Length: 138
Image (cartoon, rainbow, N blue to C red):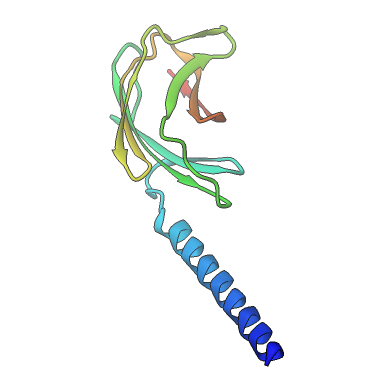
């Protein structure tokens, strides 16, 4: 009788583990990044962003639309910090963009302005997970 109980417990544990794995896989698949953005990835986070308007001009404001997805069972932080800098010049922007959470790992950020031409580096900080992407502005 004890062998049957132990066998039942083993099967129940396996079924529970399989159900949890299927649920986690469903969560990971539900987080699809928009295909029309620039994709930046790390071990814990995948991020897609696009600028509005699509072409960034020196001295003209633009916005970003972003989507972030956790990878490898990571959890997204509740807050996203954004910035940009010119590494060769060792300075950042003259403006601080605002970030609005749209829910579900989606964000909109406004108030961006690159005040001079050259290589700029977007900085995306998701709870200590820092992602960067360089763009050249003419």
